[in-house]
Image (cartoon, rainbow over all chains, first blue to last red; front, side, top):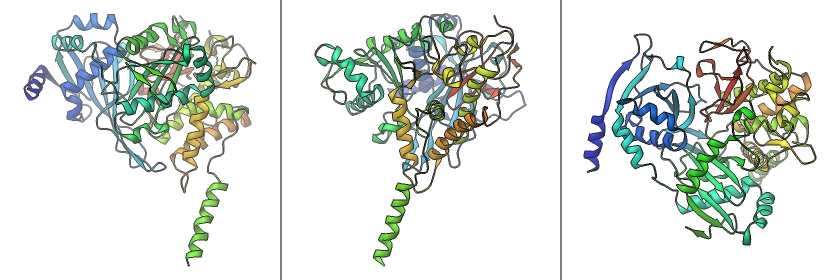
Length: 295
Length: 222
């Protein structure tokens, strides 16, 4: 059944062509990035975290979702075999960079080796960057009705990490907020009980979003390792944390704080909260490193 | 023979314990505070956004140039407050921001008005330093930490960043006249620019460094 489904998807993925303009050689992107299921996962990730109403309106006005793929050569450390591919959605003027990590960290005696390509950057493109004949890119297209149907069906899809990974997140959360601050806000909570929401994890991004409701803090945890890749991925170092205090670091518009990188727009914060509270999983923590009860 | 080996091993251990590869200035010092920001803003091996030592070092230098440009390269038509959020003060003030508005995530003025940083920043730096000093020879972690440390010290010694501003001569971005230099950076995961007259520096101008996106300004403010 799964095989038949895959064949159907391949048929829906229209290979439009290579567009090199005869100027630069085109490196064919890896098959796993051209896989329709993978591209649908990327769309789902964007649907959850980036796309807005206007984007859907633009997409609905087209028969096909156009996608450009380009292998990007990077100057990496000696021995680093990581690969990068830029996935462009020209109709939305949006570029997603994905990376398949493959390098060693001698100081830790470990290897960072992803099972697949994971999102490592997202950026808006200028109109002039979305030209009609993209040099050096492979151009694909997917049937828009299929894309929209799958996004609609998956809009409430929820995948969560294993219990052991959640405990690691809780422990890291405690460290990142700071023991003193945690304790102060913990005391404010009734019975010292801390409520935490964990947003669904994406298969194409090594990041987890957490809403610590009691403390009114949003945390973003990210890594170059696969978050579900085993114990080594959850060593303290690899869980880089960004924290946003909702009481202090949310503005209606970034125009209020131009140039600053310390604030979330209310729109962005609202989306994160929706993904954490509505789509996510609620947990109660008595002690930060322990999960007492899971809804 | 065994005693000789034992002495040799002990001597290595002692050497490692007494002569760390990396010793950073305390964050309570000006150079230590600046170095903490630079370290905090760049990815290390294993962290998302990491590409190479050279890329992370380039990002640290570019961030230092953003801070310096906010002080000494305010373009015609703009005020210092418009580009940095503060009207006066040195680079530390540019980092912490003023009037209750932060400029750099994790760095702020505490209730006494003193420069402070989130505890998670200090914890991460402490952990990175531990890794850097844990091996038998300095590796990539040490290279990155020492680079930021020297960049910060050099800045306070000479009064300017110790390297070239790669964005200094930018004149046009996608058909729009810009001022040159960079005046802001954000994690490379934001769809929108940081407000005001900031213009995204695209990849063709090396606008993405160390997991961060850099921004310059429109030559003609809106």
